[in-house]
Length: 349
Ligand SMILES: [Zn+2]
Ligand SMILES: [Zn+2]
Image: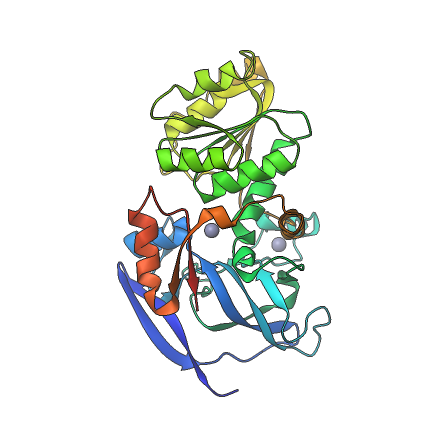
């Protein structure tokens, strides 16, 4: 194949350009060449587009964004055994070193070296393009009945699965998810399929509250009622066994700590811009609740795919918009600007 293909590069703040470039070739025997089918727009893509940086990662060279994607295998390296041409796959976007102690413990999201994560400036390009190569063991064949559109949402669902694992949710427990964005709505559905009931979901955006309700959750409009009171009212005043915080704001972190039952677990997923004043050490000591972080996921793709294949997760209701590759900018802008209407926006190369 010596054809060319399109790729969308971010050159700087608000500056996306389409490049025509050669279709990438397999460079190692463990790689696959994938024709990208669908890419979800993530908050991090929007952040790079608007600000040109996230923390220490600064856009200095043009970079291709997008890391939530599915595609079809079009070529395989000599050592690839579990995939063949035509297989549809969901792809883990982070390459860990696989050799350090954390990796060998199975917690490769915490790799002691740096996980080479897609669409991270200085590390590697993302998926807003027609073709890419990637290590084959990070590509998971989609089970039957799991569409390519679903496949593009395995990545955020994996975060939800990781959150439920970290929360230690078991059947019969109660849970609350603060924030009804894509991660929150997926974490809530994962919690329900892990056996939590009720699963209280809160947000300040009323259309998202309505969507949470449609998905079978106990929805609370945080703009209209006090979240902590509402959660206590549904748990005989005790609070929930597990709170999953996905909004990433100081007030919601405080709510999470106030809404968790004594002895329960708070899981923090949402990234915070500032964290001054967050720690409530005496409350943690006296009520013996655990506060645990979630950083991406490890070994969550297979369970996420199983939950989708089993029909336990409604992904279609979260997909609100779809754009072709040359309208990637529209897709990102829609995600940024249409907080009420847009939940998960897909780009279809
Ligand atoms: Zn993401
Ligand atoms: Zn490692």
